[in-house]
Image (cartoon, rainbow, N blue to C red; front, side, top):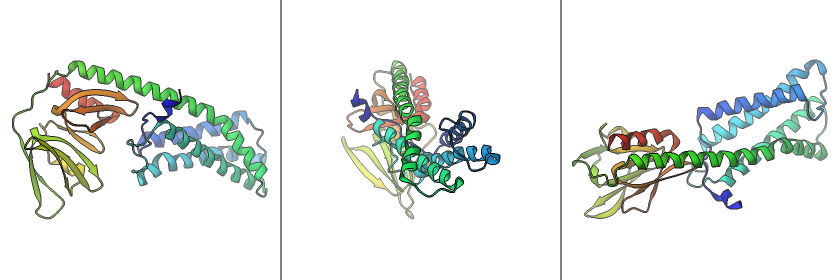
Length: 287
């Protein structure tokens, strides 16, 4: 059972969905406190009661925006699918709870003109965790199983439509200009396996005289993608990967999305949820 904690899970990313989640969660907290007052919160001024209770939700929203959007935007290497697991997601949510509880405790002391007290601090921490810990663990586990089931079904569907062996397409040459002045490089599409973003560079894996090699070029993955022909079999499948779908030998799924196994290659190329329809369409049209 505990092994599930080490399974892969999508890392938080700076997307609009997370901003919406932060606002809705903060609104839920505010309304929950307003209508149920579960812990008999003492407020200094009953005339401002509605505003003061709603402000607890505002605090929750600001903290969630920081953790779910701003930090993943500023620290992409920390919030990377490559290392993110179920346990990291649960711990991450627990840290968010701790921060929300801390700021709510400070705010409670402020509106009641109270000095800091470790007893009151631990009291608000306990109350917050009572509300949040079990639901967070349960929802994360439930979401993990839902994602795994969905992505495995997607992988199975694509494999049914995919030819057992996709032959290489006709010889296509690509000429790419890098970010360095007057520097270009060229390659044959049939020799290309994948390219991975490494900051402002890409590492490109390709076949050279029947030997797999890697080369590094100073060019962003987006710029590299823009210079490829629209009819190319080289497809963006992840924010960090472009892959030659003609080289795919097997497809599997996990909570993060799909995983592509390439011919004669140990590197497993990820397909994030955003790009699954594109990969699915490719194999549907290349029957």
